[in-house]
Image (cartoon, rainbow, N blue to C red; front, side):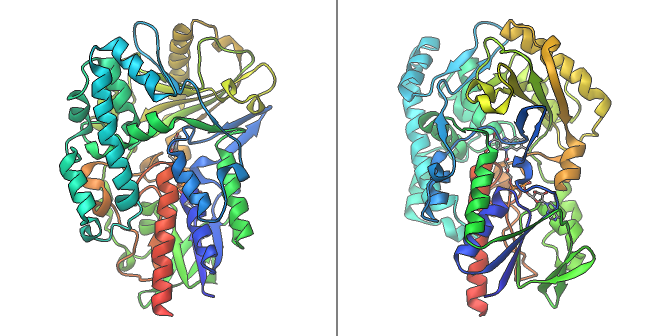
Length: 492
Ligand SMILES: Cc1cc2nc3c(=O)[nH]c(=O)nc-3n(C[C@H](O)[C@H](O)[C@H](O)COP(=O)(O)OP(=O)(O)OC[C@H]3O[C@@H](n4cnc5c(N)ncnc54)[C@H](O)[C@@H]3O)c2cc1C
């Protein structure tokens, strides 16, 4: 069988590898880092185990569907627990908004905050459900090679019934007035890498998924999913070469013939590149073989980068849940310092994951494992000297909101920022979450899965369709593998 090479071992690369191997191809994954997992790697130090990237397990159906394609279930590999409550949001005054795991309790919460909002939430969710079902069936798993793929009666009638092209910001405000409810409904789309006024209301499907299917956690951490996929891939015959950066994709007469690894040619029949699209095009391909010129990328809206702190605390912290959003400062000011006038934020909003609230295996007994994330504009100049001042800022606010002392109990601390994303993943502008899912960067408007000039080269990952996030990365790998298999079947 022909040999398929996969560049990168994040979720999209692992997914592509599994599908290609299942179809009978000889598959090898090349990963520049010494460990697999890409942005979802983990590390252990001083008794703490930190997930380095994703922490929200949403859309459990997508994971089920992935494993089901191989006759497996997530529970064959990891123990999944539903978080209850799902998460909390701290505002600048009043008690935090604790988001229940059951939809009926969410209706009650809405009604207690804004009269009449429970009924409006029902309508919001009904539209979200329609969008979710149509998207899962007829949109998200498509390669997006052309708009014709979406021209079905079902898609057109769903588009006419729901407000898919309006902005998520305007859409949400047409249902709710209370700023806390608006934040709650807008927050899921922030994962898509842009302000709600730039994200199409199609993505209220994420609210439907988040608030009806719940927020989950794989015991021992998100890296368990990577381990599960690696085990599955190996069982299908996939080989891995770690610590091996691909230096060049060798193209002869519009066909990939090999990869340059350690200055040596490795012959291959087809490549699925799941490393960041920009890196693959601009650094691994010669100019005539690229889909896009350098200035194409300058004009793209990148999802943010982040300043992350991995923190170990030698006591239990009061009033913290597993997932905590600190929206206690001016949302619009921080957002404009990410998207409009990129700069280090004055008073950042931030997110704290505290997996030890669910799982005591990720820290020594009686201690707390904290992952603190401050969103930053991609492309900012990293200033390691600033990291400590941001740490002081966020820890002071966290202490105040939790009404507990933390700073004096920190026994482990490590920061991770723009330079690290660039060095570790060849991330364009040090982005964390890829390319934003704005209207102009959705579906056919995204960098495509196929290289138009080199027929046996395909792309996967969070800079191509369907977009950023773990579930989309799984889907992206599947789409790329299917397109690759179609090509090989046709040319055989
Ligand atoms: C901090 C953070 C928090 C996040 N939180 C969430 C969350 O809570 N929920 C969620 O669903 N999503 C979340 N995401 C997004 C999600 O993690 C990503 O969308 C997903 O992991 C991306 O997978 P990928 O395969 O596209 O890319 P990657 O994981 O980046 O994989 C690409 C791989 O290619 C490798 N590579 C690069 N260049 C080369 C080369 N020349 N040769 C060989 N290998 C190379 C890289 O080292 C990397 O391993 C988060 C991301 C980050 C960074």
